[in-house]
Image (cartoon, rainbow, N blue to C red; front, side, top):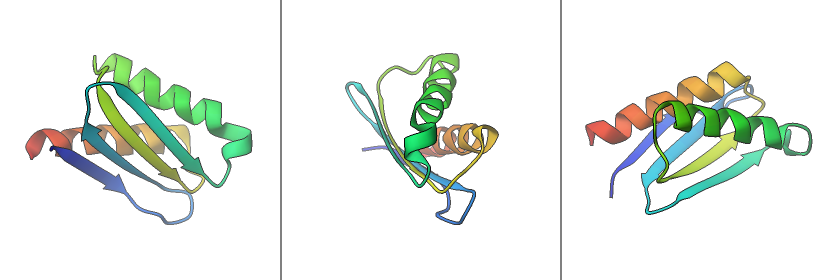
Length: 84
């Protein structure tokens, strides 16, 4: 199974793990989940749509990262998954 990981669990960062899957599954764990769950989900989904990816499992462990950090970590994890 291919897997890609990017980021850290440091404050203001996010750890993104992506795995091959037969469906789209996005699992978000965030210290700011009550306020920003929908925004984090939207950033992940928009990035996946732009990359034309609709079958993947994404685990997002957020520590208060900004949108551009989430996007960058997701793109890096996707690249690392391709390299495996």
